[in-house]
Length: 614
Ligand code: F6R
Image 1 (cartoon, rainbow, N blue to C red):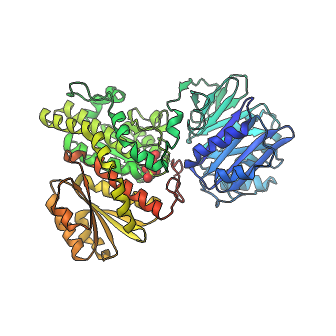
Image 2: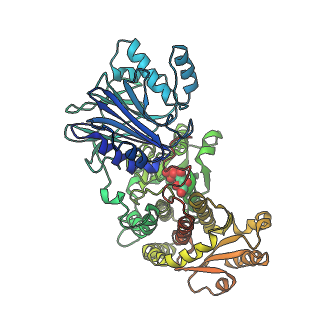
């Protein structure tokens, strides 16, 4: 949801900004721009399209500067065009500003600024900020950082900002509320990014800004941080960036998505590492130890999340209810937060997010906390807003996920949720030791079984050919495979733009069956399950209407294989762990269909990785 990069120091800023923007492009790719502080003022270059287009545009331009800001946009207010691209300039051209977030009261501010004589060049909410700062800076006898602080005190909404000015050429001003921003500390230089990706190459010493912070970075001086809501200087501790450069490269794969699908055995292993003790009779999740009693005594678990993370939450509903025997409600974070939900103090809310920056999920967390519930986070990005906003939590250790379509984050989330359910079930005594051992033994074999499943890649590429000219697809699953059907459909629609819907298999006959004809591919999850026979009947119902069956079965299954047009055989596992394997062929299927249709797999249209707006 927009990427921000900035640099100030003695290096050339432009190459750092461009490289950083390329690494942040997954956050949005509608337009890109940079502003560079040069001897004779600010040089501004921006265009519609990708960072590569911007770089091409700048090929013969003077881009020499030691301070600069760069932005890659996911459009919210105003269509993707050059005028709406960031940076935005003040009326006198002396202040440049980039923004990630949404200014909710921008219309009121805009009217006020128009009445004071300002004219607007863009349709964005962001442009009000640069004029507001300029207005205060010129009219009040204050420094530029103070003008920013005053301006932001009247702003409603979310922002991560980087600002530079020809009138204060030694200063880079940074501010944050609700959108992420971190500052890397180099030798007499500062690197800024929406996440660690543009920074990690230069330094691992970072400071995470907190909401309301306004920071001033001056090369050779200490970072100075004040807050919009408090007087005086603020102390923010330096932390180590948990990321390495290799994780950000494609490593020989054609796309990040494919690389990340193939990284799942490792991501699952890493998410389990150190959490299952040697004798395997205890699961311990360090991050939640202090809250274990609260979790064991929970009246109810409420899982809040969005998108793929919501599907992981839905898998967890089956896991928690079956193992921990406590009721679970799964909520779309966006609906939960506006519904005035009933939340009890002995409820435990589990918020799940890969990025840890999803605006709706964060808002749901704040709401649950304000009602007295205990809030546990599960997220992938260390130091993210979610990680800091929750009472406690467990990280997934999937490594950076760059492909916009989430893959390894999903399996890592399901792994951590499985461990959490096992930990609580043992402590509560709702799971017999023998059953516990059976699940744990199976869990340990999952990385190897996912590895085996990945060997089906070529077969799945062949099956994908039959989808290329299709306009619709249906995904069916029962029980714990139902959320996998939803996830498979989401993967297909988001990267190949084929309309796809997931249903509980039994729901098909209550409506969707009307859609089935010889043109309709129906992907059925038909692995060994208590409801296997019922699924077989559902397959017959599709076949009777000439639908094309693509089944995912447990290896060795002959019955469903014979009924299917295409059959994908995956390794057997304990039923509750099936999603960790059954989702993999569906990820590969979506990937190959999208590639065959010529779609941009890593950067699907209209999407962004980190949805930090409502
Ligand atoms: C789908 C996808 C999205 C995200 C959703 C939540 O492939 O990536 O649906 O799952 O935007 O994002 P996080 O998990 O970062 O909160």
